Image 1 (cartoon, rainbow, N blue to C red):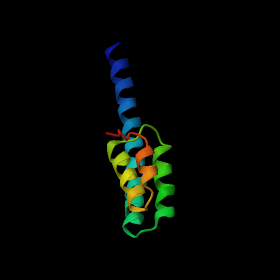
Image 2: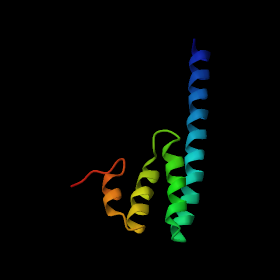
Image 3: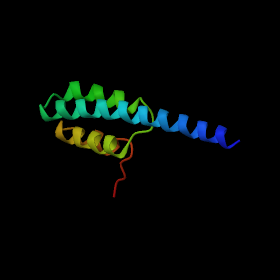
Amino acid sequence: MASKNFAAIWFLTLMFAQLVESQDSALRQAARLDAAHKCSEAERFYEQALAQGPPSLALLNNLGNHYVLCGDVEKALAAPGVVAV
């Protein structure tokens, strides 16, 4: 029983690590494009990262910053994970 639990936990850990790595790759590319003010190109990478599963805090933060940088404050406020105060 313990070996089955270990195998299941190991499998889930590997899957999560792959998901995070994939999201991070898209996030890094999007950040590079944001720095170059290539908003429409960057947005595709943010959408790709969001489609890969539950978003990381870094992804949500960068997405909000992306919208502000690109002049779309309304989208920044409506982005996933935003809490208006």
